[in-house]
Amino acid sequence: MARRDPKHRDITRSEQLARRALRFALDPAVSRETAADRLIHLADGQAPTLELARAQILRAPWSGPTATAALGALQLSLRHLRGDRTLRLVILGPPGAGKGTQAPWLARHLGVPHISTGDLLREQATADTELGARIQATIESGRLVPDDLVLRTLETRLAEPDAMQRGYLLDGFPRTVEQARTVATFIAPATVDVVIALAVGPETVARRLALRGRADDTRSAVRTRLERYDCETVPALDWYEEAGLLLQVDGDRPPDRVREDLCRRIDGLGLSPCH
Ligand code: AMP
Image 1 (cartoon, helix red, strand yellow):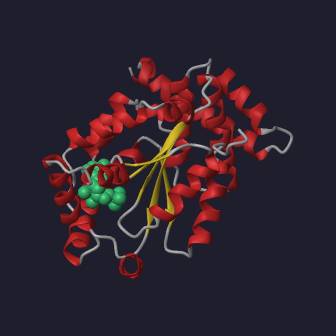
Image 2 (tube, rainbow, N blue to C red):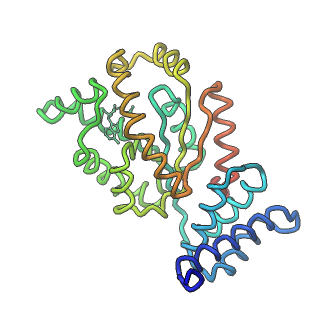
Image 3 (cartoon, helix red, strand yellow):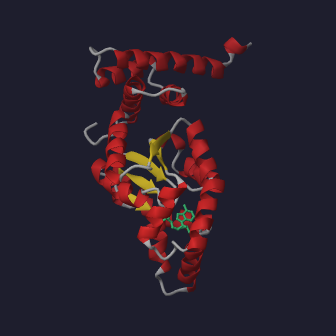
């Protein structure tokens, strides 16, 4: 019987919790801190119930200040519950989406290290070794570097004290569903606070890349990178959307406007440094 099914009970519970979070958000007398404390209490201190409630609000086909405030309270309750001062974010976007501009700035704003797998791999590519040369050739072609190598590189970087103590803004990883699954096993999905997807149209991509002139910005490498993004990274974004972790940001605007919007929405989720 469906009603006895524990999974069904969890969902009903998290739906009630999502509704309570929305009601708190509409009540000017309830601060975000108070709402977060009450939500922990209502969820019996169960993080999965709070995560499910958050996912339900994120998946709802509407957004706006009430949803944002409710998400902020749920996010804060999860962070209180984990006794966790770290922030773990991911930023993804096709070539020319503006990650290189927005990510370092956002990382500084949040007080976390900016860890770009592209930067880490480009650094390795400069080594005068056969491996270095292979990585260089792969990057220049626009193809993806093999997973085992990317993972080893990333694991080493994430084990450094700044990332262990403060968390990170991961830029350019995970780029495939397979990599997202790996993160889920070695970092655990619940510990990723939010995945930012910068969305841009083809004209913006072409205009920005023409100005940038990076070694792997040749026409054929860009075409390959865009294809890889559509075939491999977009399914990873869908995967995160299912998990209720995806925050879509319109990157087709001047950088300052994108920055402002990113800041407002991240702060609205309760992820600003003052929380
Ligand atoms: P980016 O700086 O993020 O544009 O990355 C530049 C290049 O580094 C990519 O085109 C890939 O060849 C390689 N790369 C970066 N991140 C990854 C990843 N997560 N998996 C595989 N290859 C990657």
